[in-house]
Amino acid sequence: MSNRETYISRDYAEAIFQRVIRPMPPYNFEPDWDDQPSRFKIYSDAERIALPTNFPARLAPMADVLHRIGTPQPEGRSLSYEELSTMLQFAHGAHSRRLRITWNHDARALSVYPVSHFAYARGTASGGGMYPTEIYWGCGASGALLPGLYHYNN
Image 1: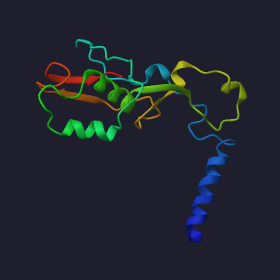
Image 2: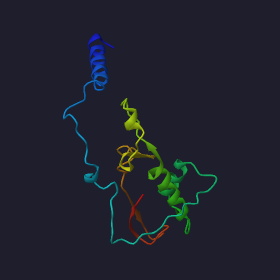
Image 3: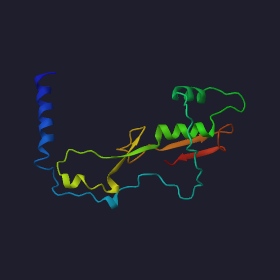
Image 4: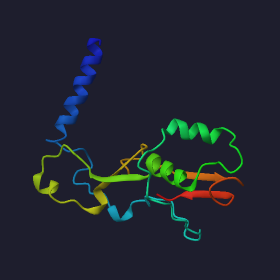
């Protein structure tokens, strides 16, 4: 690393640490959590189909499942409804709720956890778990569901 890069890195770290002493403008800014965009795409007129949540004890590797999807299957052997549910949940579903960790030293503020500040652990990058990847599933005649285009509402 060159001296110039070292100085840039040091200056950046110093600016971050100074944020504890001098907050960034606009000062005293508070986000309006009631005005945030929806965290999920909502299709209110669409029929909802519940996916099974009883996942098998032993799971096939994702590479095997994806290979089988892309390979022509004998009649009657396509991705099952349960396999589809498992794949969508593990790849794109909300796995757990966690608190957002910050470097703020305000102990009083750390003891309050408003619902709007929760983050969700997901299998994909999604803005801190707040805004998930949108998944649309196109199902053909031999699929696990009736032919059509489906939105995964996670």
